Image 1 (spheres, rainbow, N blue to C red):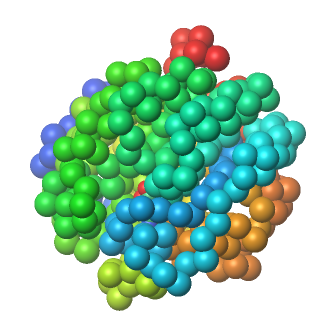
Image 2: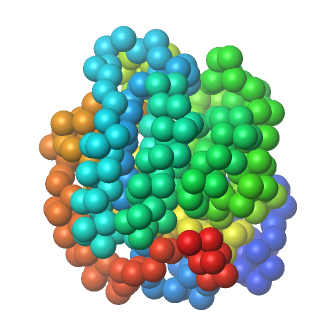
Length: 348
Ligand code: 5AD
């Protein structure tokens, strides 16, 4: 046991740990010690501010067939929608009007929108004096470069799992190598780059989760999103077991310890799996929440995993719930764009 506590002390100091060490910590039966270490490091490196990112889910069309995702192309039971340019801009204005300093445009891999159209939307949203994060999947390097030139600041593309075999088994027609290349292209082009993984995928082992963390570190990711796998009807994994909240919390806390200055959300999937998910995430290293700014009718259709419609709140209600959590945890609302490093403010 002492051995494990020594390992944790070392991790707190050096932010380095090897695969075996991570596996040991992941199976440690007193995770509270890891959680509080992560909370301490979060406070030391990124302070008490919680940054809000306004999420616009602008299309649920997708050409991919990821085994876990409800929006997979082959799921015919989904009613598809896409927002018009005007609707996207209106949602962005509402978010900016609520003082959200980052807009996240997320969608399925919908080939309807051309890169030049997306660039035009990015340029218009930038006029609202916000940072822009894109989360629209795999694109050629040149398209990423165009979007960067148009003013996009950040990009989210989860590796989903760092195991090549598991990745390729869950993503028919996709290659692990291309996923990794996309992430390195994004970094190289100057995007603040976010990645992350699903916890509890069938076939996932503690060793694979440990490799996920080492992958985040190697990439030097700027943002990490981690959530539990939630089985979704209409997908090949509909009858599998859900990922465990506690394992997600362990992964979040170890991520904070390994990459102390990154931005890390308490994810929506965590909040869907546990009514206190946001609060628990924030207490083990997370410093970001992503309220949804879309129209409620569209939100109901953005079913990457099942969620209770009763939980679909207006932006105002989401923000007042978040405020309560921040108060309880003596955390403050971030008022800046919330970049990873102060120096990258120059990109705005
Ligand atoms: N359960 C949990 N998370 C999921 N995602 C997709 N489907 C599911 C699911 N069934 C996550 C993926 C994706 C992100 C937008 O949503 O990790 O990157």
